Length: 332
Image (cartoon, rainbow, N blue to C red; front, side, top):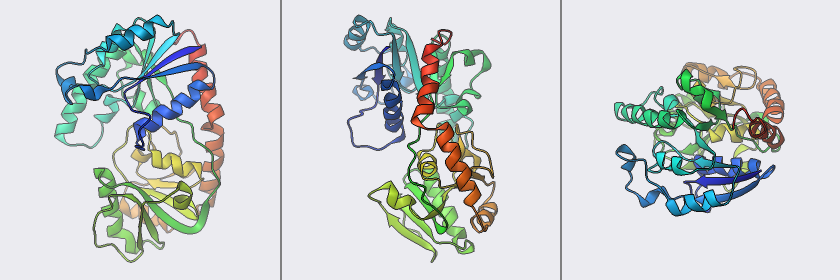
């Protein structure tokens, strides 16, 4: 199979962000069973908010080159905010739009009125594509929020997880990981700091842009870590108490790869199909989070998580799932 992969993310940059990670992991899967050529279509050449009035822009030179090479299919890693969104329809080769997460899911979240309005606008643009093209998402939590009449054009491209050494330690540290310029992460950190003295474990804070707060005595500020091994070694659980969730949370995936359970609100586990008290720990209040942090044994949760991850998220398993989509002529 011969695939052209158009991405609006610069995969050669040194930035470690979710959208680049998604592209890189999907490309690794695709390359395992097909020939893939990668094309970068830079959306930043246009005015930042151009999508509001026009998303029919075209890269005619690129599109002509792709159509001339007889690809079996073009996968377009984009988002409804793209100034090229409807312009991609000018490609004559069969297409799959890789949205990853859905504006319909985004607009169900606890967000400001401003962003709620933006999400409604973007969902109409997403619908304009779903009406005639196949669109791929990370999981069923995205698809179930899309109007049923358009779900027939929805595909699932799930993440794979590299299975690492089991670093779980039932008497180890609790950790929080993230960039705290992201408001949900900042609110999470502030809330957990407020209750930290009621938790019977040290809590280690990793990541960037850590705010200046009056931290409790069992909060240990670490900041940047050279490796993920350093973060997750001798860890009891990842605390991820955010109340915003679309797509997939990379920190939860990282913790899963080391058999580290995550304690968080349900929004931390979107598109993962994890089961509360079996392979994750879902809380609905800070009081609940305190009780679970102080519970005696998380070993069974860790063991279940480790086996579940190997069974459902290995490269081989995810490759088989995605390859099956391309082998099913009804879908493409």
